[in-house]
Image (cartoon, rainbow, N blue to C red; front, side, top):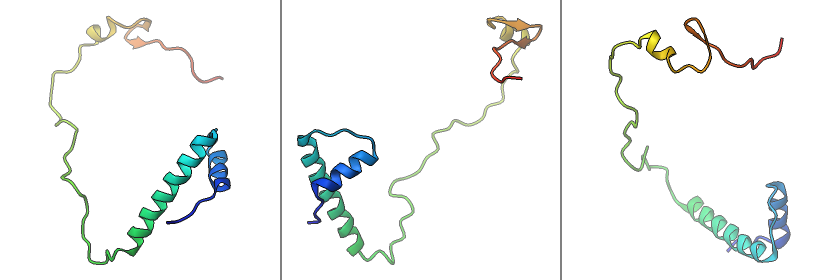
Length: 96
């Protein structure tokens, strides 16, 4: 088991801007040791011939494009809170 000291946990917490009480310091110390142990086990694996590109099937979550009727400008502008002719008026976001 890899050992991480209390001081190392506190240093990591300080770098991550996390405040830890004493109970959490010990909990995170054990958790970090466990993670590092798992990483060591992965280093020992011979994955030279492994050819897995993705562990599960990949499907696009995007819908197919569909051709539809264009929006009618009068219908679009009907709900505009502020407009100038056929254009939306929005607050200025950049200064001169």
